[in-house]
Image 1 (cartoon, rainbow, N blue to C red):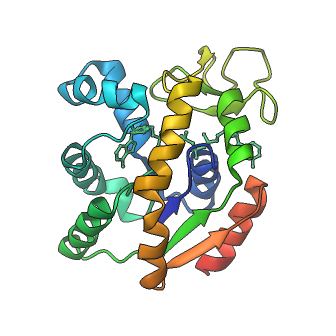
Image 2 (cartoon, protein in one colour):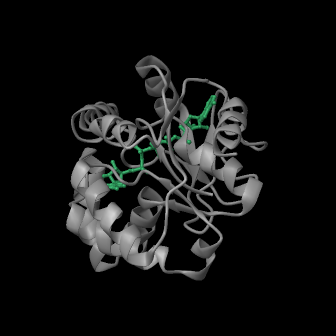
Length: 214
Ligand code: AP5
């Protein structure tokens, strides 16, 4: 599959990507995870991106596009890919159109996770993420707790709250989504590529997404 997952912060893009990846081994490309790894590793990209991320603002398009082009050329993307958190703005979507045309790749669909704001807020304040950069498994103290409190089931490292999970940053991320990212729903709808899924259960979202793709 070659798809984009759209949706507000906390909609479940990372969770659904993990389950879809098990289905056909497509590469999971989360620009948020790539940026967090860069911050942790202290690279030039990470140093530039950190302040934007902590405030809940978008990182400039110029930094994102080079990073995505490099990732898309890696061998695992030949099987397919799931974009999680990218594109985030109309200019990013337009640049992606050009990049895919240049690489002769066709997208199958854009799947929009349509989740109420109150659910999203609740999920973000209770999310926990594995601190191991190579793992970054996602949990939730209410809906998907770790087996041992505070410890990742997959790699045994501590699970933490992300630095953009303060109430102020969460509200800014939602406002940024409404202003800069939600116009992508119309952008892809007009191209006839959009499938909106309103289910709250990630298992149902995965089933509906696979049905839509086949
Ligand atoms: P990013 O990491 O992409 O964050 P986001 O889009 O805000 O999305 P989240 O990761 O917060 O949520 P999600 O939808 O993946 O939900 P999850 O599965 O974790 O971006 C972070 C920052 O990086 C941005 O603010 C920006 O600064 C920068 N950035 C990234 N990409 C960029 C780009 N392209 N351009 C510019 N800047 C960029 O689920 C949330 C919680 O809910 C979890 O606890 C989970 O366990 C739980 N949950 C999930 N599904 C369910 C369910 N069905 N039922 C119950 N609980 C559930």
